[in-house]
Amino acid sequence: MGAIVGSIDLAQVVLYMFWIFFAGLIFYLRREDKREGYPLESDRGGRVAVQGFPSIPTPKAFRMASGETLYRPDRKADTRPVNAQPIAKWPGAPLEPNGAPMLAGVGPGAFAEREDRPEMTSEGHPSIVPMRFEPLASIDPNDADPRGMNVIAADRAKAGVVADLWIDRGEPQIRYIEVETNSGKHVLVPMVFTMIDGYSKTVKVDAILASQFDAAPTTAKPDQITKREEDRISGYFGAGLLYATPKRTGDVL
Image 1 (tube, helix red, strand yellow):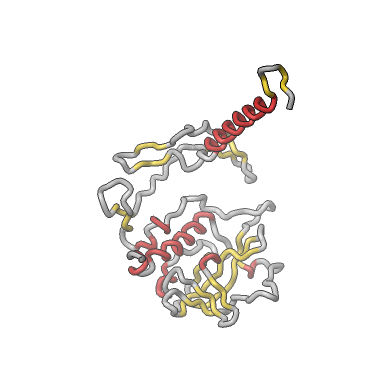
Image 2 (cartoon, rainbow, N blue to C red; image 1 turned 135 degrees about the horizontal axis):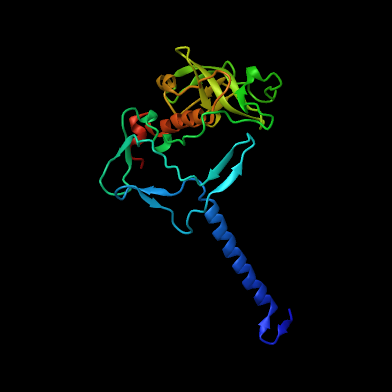
């Protein structure tokens, strides 16, 4: 490229402008991703606010499809007590859950306290529902239909039978399988924790034991699930990956 004047190179000016733009973009994105979850809390004595650089942005109004307006960040701290104790006195020590570890809500079982209402479609209907309430939904003939299959837990024992499937109306996929346990209780298992075996006609759930299915959180209504219930159910099975058996918390070589 030719020079505008003898001492200014146009290509170099464009390069510098790009660097300035890109630095500003990084700064903007780093501030925007702090609208939720910040400030952090430190365990270095007391409740020390940690926000890093750049600082938390000023509140911004978000108009939701429901008509309400939310402001983020709202600086509302999670005041739920941590149901665990550190195993050592140094900062950052691993936490040991109090009581039943799979219901403590810590570690892999931690969950956010989201709204206690269901995810909605653009038409204003609950997004995740059982297939029995959605007559237009069906399983592809080339795929195995898990309904009626036995559910096999991590201890290779039968935990129950698949009673139904919960689908997402907004996306063509199964979100949960509804299991009728050996005791007759109905619980939801996130699809990501299952493996459907069409040959043996079983659904394998390696996250927890057969005896632990009855303790899984349930929904308040039989035909819908709220955001908070989704997180609690997922947290229970996530906790099982570490706390279902004592061996899972031990060292792995």
